[in-house]
Amino acid sequence: MSIFTLLMAILPLGDTTTSTLQQEQIDSMAAHYLNMAVDEQTQSSFAFDNPDKQQKHPWMAALETFGINAGVQLFDRFALDADFAQINFKTIHHNIKNGFVWDNDQFSTNLFAHPYHGGLYFNAARSNGLNFWESVPYSFGGSLMWEVVCEIEPPAINDLIATTMGGVCIGEVTHRISDLVYDDRKSGMERFWREALATVICPIKGLNRLISGDAWKVRNSYYSYHDYDRLPVGLAISVGERYLADNNSLFRGEQTPYVNVSLAYGDPFNEQENKPYDYFTADVSFNLFSNQPLISGVHLLGRLWGTPVATQDELQMQFGIFQHFNYFDSQPVKDGTSLVPYRISEAAAVGPGVIYRFPQIGNLTKLEQRIFVDAILLGGSLSDYYNVIDRDYNLGSGFSTKVNTLLEFGRYGSFVINADYYRIYTWKGYEGKDLDTVDPLYLNAQGDKGNAALLVVNPRLMLHVGKNWCVDLSTSYYYRKTHYAYHPDVTSKTFDVRAGLMVVL
Image (cartoon, rainbow, N blue to C red; front, side, top):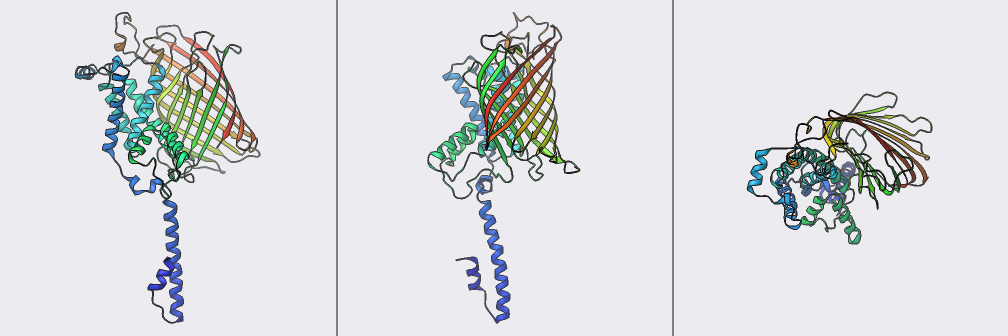
């Protein structure tokens, strides 16, 4: 029975005048309830409107954080029989008594694997209903537990910083990207592959969906996990060939197939969507079938807070506070010199930024300028002298500035140029210590005392060759000048070139 029929049945009818008035009231009320029903139906398509999804489970999040550490520790101890995992109460007491040091793990472990691990802690909270800020302590607590309890090696201050802050960044990005994949209306193989892909992106959320049964429940309401009208998403995937020069040599280098994935999430000029990471960008590059690291670059930028600034003549301007995570990694070129081309990290960084959008001018359909300045709490750069255990890089703090310019030329294509400058200071060296007699686990050095200036310039041209298809041409120039307090200064530079085919989704 419709709302209109129900109202007709229960409302008394009088003379013609009264009936007409009642009819108008009925029509008005019917329209009102119809609109409410439409609104309810529209809202009910999104999982975040589901009352069950709005519940918070902080103790379950804490239990899962503990479980992540316990599971990894037991695997390291019994499956891998790793020396560092043979813990007992004495090792825990020793770690607490000894305090934190700077460790000597390899670049990818300290500055990517640890932040990724922190993202698991963070998503233990996010997937249990906690918001962004409520989830931050879980990254810190999980990291603190691992450093003090789960290893016999002394706890590392750099790991605590990278795991906490880098984990927040990677955790929130993967949490939101996985929501783009889930669709509870689907079933069969499509549903299986969606659940599998989303679990690869955000493992802890996928695990929780298996535990709750959400991974196979088919729903006709509360089925969508992302509202594209509120938060638009642009995805581009580029596949091609990359040439990495050996010591800046034009004819001595290494070629490798690559895959690059770029994502823009949200609109920086949407004033209504201003929660942390309602706007972020992500760019990840993979090397395939080569001597180079599988993951050569991870670049994440997330807005923590933003506000519009007064504009004139259709110029839009947005000021905000942004979190940065940048990771550049490479290995010596095969059959070349033994020099590592570059290693740069910005694992924990936050600072202000401004984004401009200029009015359209002729064939220039879009012009945006972005300027960021941030403080680097923890960063890393390649060292020419420090080589202890697995570490050949310096750790430190400093600052960075970034300038990004985007020009779009309608149906012809677009051009982007990025310029990043990093300055990282290392103040705790190893001078005065005998490396032959000091236990390297307790050396407690950031590396070579000094500072490194790092510049990365990356122009990129995308030419349209069909609907949603582009030829993708880019190059990156890497420059490093490191001043050493106790060694001769070193200047290093090199470049890479990429040519590929891009699909824009």
